Image (tube, rainbow, N blue to C red):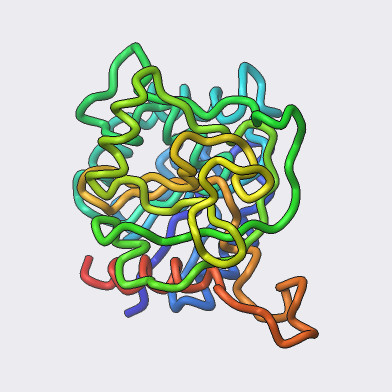
Length: 260
């Protein structure tokens, strides 16, 4: 049986169907479920083998991108979310979903979550919304979503608050050393961006584009791998230069979910 994927839908979510298509292509059975259906018990968390928090502008980004969705996860769904993560099932948050995972404390490490955030995703250092293609470098074998991926991934970004920062720069270094920095922004030749704009589109510390939890089953990233699952989506496909499909991430997640 192919794994079932729960795609959370909040007011303002707009990348749910893109995520569903990517999951279908990777071999999963996706279902987009409004949060109210979970709240009313019309759908059960335990019936799904993977969880996706897609992109968009949940609750119109009131109080900050992903903040109200994060509060909803903390107060209305804290138990089910914690159980899902602790079970080892794969979880991915994309763009707004990543912002919600970080601001709810589920990333980078739920065991260290507290009233004082470990990190945040704040306004892009360039001062404006970024909507274009970037190159990502998978660098973590800890993360089940990136494990075994050795080639750069090309996919779009579309965000105004994707700048990952932490209070303690040494803590960022520890994330990189532990393998929790799963994806880095890179130059087109595959080398880390080293903070250089536009390769690092938002100024994120240590070029971090995606983070995983210590167990490696939860991944959050700002770029949109679901928007590059077919070669024809790549801006250079007519020149035969399409590469680095984001589908590889989803295939890893779906394959891992098959054990649950």
